[in-house]
Amino acid sequence: MAKTKEAAEIQVVKVQRGRVEFCILGTSPIILNRMSEKARHVLLLPNPPGKTRSGLKHDPYAEFLASPYTDPDARGQTYLMCLAASFKKALCGAALDLPGATKAQLGRLTWVEGERLGLYGVPQLFMSVTRCADTNRTPDIRTRVIVPKWACRVAINFAKPIINETLIANLLVAAGMTQGIGDWRAEKGSGNYGSFEVVGADNPEFNRIIKAGGRKAQQAAMQTPEFYDEESHEMFQWFKAEVAARGKTDLLKHEQKAAKAKKLKAEPVGAS
Image (tube, rainbow, N blue to C red; front, side, top):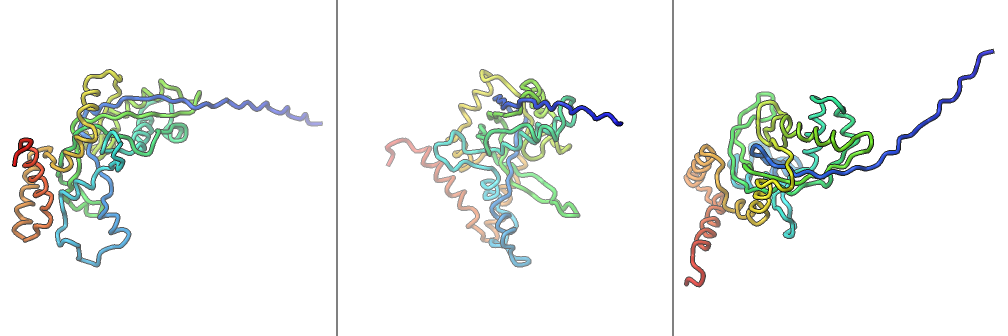
């Protein structure tokens, strides 16, 4: 007569939620880019073939304004925001190169708090050559927000004891070097933008950016942006001249507003 197997005792590990906060300091400029309102409208209701509203392919300043995620709440500490999921993706990507946890495990066992995180730093206007996603990889010019010096705070929840604080910290440090966030990041293989490091809350550069790169400074920079580099400045100035030559002066209204704002700022208080 065959012997019956003894039933194995089932042991369930008690899982708890752990939480750790990090101060993030950018080590290379971050390029912010979300799908523009124009692109979303075209997906929802495409224009007739060969037709655009303005007759021009691009409106650089409008693209600049539309490129970042923003906080509409006037009480928010920042105007610019980044997706919390960007840090989770970077964390999971770092696991591919380091031992200790797999990308799939981190995807299931970690959560970054919030949907969008406040991003500190003063934005600038950045124009560069990009490649479209078509089969021919057609070149194009894209205008986006770039933040040369940036910082943010991120809180990560994880399942204990399967994941611990040390593992999360090590992976996040590695993610800052090998993954990054934003456009043209290290993860893509060709860019170096969006890299970061984990610093202490008392880091002088971190606190300087937090203090000088809040909501008020960001909104002012979005209204009258400075150019990130000479190439961006040259392309934008050529666009202005060409638009004026073609009679599309409605695309230059922001220039008039910016000039008026600078004039009012320069006038002494009480001037008539």
